[in-house]
Length: 315
Image (cartoon, rainbow, N blue to C red):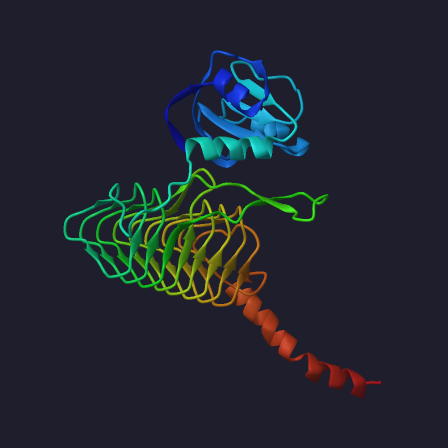
């Protein structure tokens, strides 16, 4: 998320109650997760094993829970609970705006777009030309939709990321990381009925041009799906996955977080993808392997009873 105007690091430090170490003349231009930061961004880290990755990232300002050497030209903001400080900043710079009507006055809707009854369109939404939005679609604040997009009934764009911090010492253990990202739907996309597409925690969830989604599909926060992909019903993709162009995911495929499925890969129905896959191949199983290998394994598994009986006969 980018700020409307740069904010002095000294103001940020005072607002969250942090000790400022490093360059006190910096101006923050946005807030982002570590895997999507750009120069000028604020990020946070509260696990020591991620310190170095955060400090050496493109982030200019890092909120951290231990005083460490500050990289040249950057600033660190030291306090006990970086997670809560980050949430405080999100609530300040992207506060919740209650809706006052079904289609916000701040929404921009292009020429030729048809909005069917009972659609909700939130604040600061942008929808392109010649789109068709079917009944009971919900489009949260700040979503952006290109031209010639079809969204079928009951689909939800922009719901919050499923991202929590565990506080084991408390009766109510999970603190919510407030989401301030967006959902971006590029032109010529079709989204089936009953799909749910979460916005990024602070970056964007993106569905690339020409991609088609079937019904009842979930796309997690910060996922980036390329162009001309096909995703069949009941597939689920966890947060921050990258699906490259021309990928096909058939029904009920489950995709883990933080991985890449390469260009042109095909994953057959009911498969589970726990780690990154090379492009240009067909996969099957849970966990997936190349389909030809997996099907040979299954053929041998079916023969186990027969082989067991033959083994007993040789005794």
